[in-house]
Length: 225
Image (cartoon, rainbow, N blue to C red; front, side, top):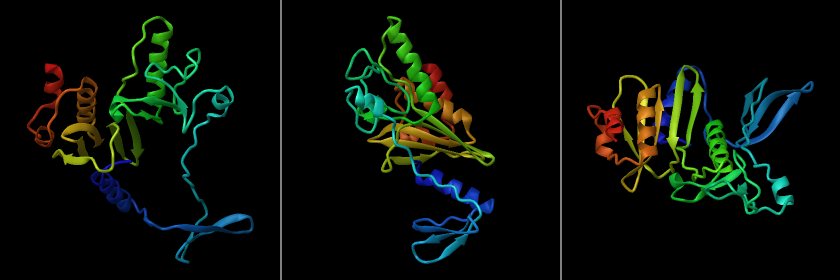
């Protein structure tokens, strides 16, 4: 979900808070005593004592009703840039909607975030009131990790290049694909996040060299546009 640089930041932060990671470890079984979980048995035979287990298994879009109605589905309800489904009288939005995005090179994507659902709601309301505009909001996300706030804008890929902008405290990682900015990840750097999000939304040119130069005022670039 994030670059190696951002992942490394949070690995160190959580380690410092007493968290132990077991990367690449498969879970074989949950073992219990007296009706309660007691340990997690790993694939290598070792065990971790536990009195609480939190399981993150991902999500499956709820598309059953749309499929029963004869709409085009497949890992979500297919919709066009105006959020209309294969039946133009029916629209879809939110986590279950698969919509083309300019931030995914025009490919349809499902975006699982509160802000995406809110922005798509505004887009759909505009179309229903006679002011149709294709959905083009910048995808952005956030996560509070202990005392740190992670903010992300754009849709990046694991092989996108990373450029770290020198900062005093926190972290700002700008991501690039084929020389063009694809996203940004910041930790405790809200000003960098907001500027980079605006740059993405406006489609302004930002070079890796400019992103890496702390003397370059990103807000001035936005104001100039």
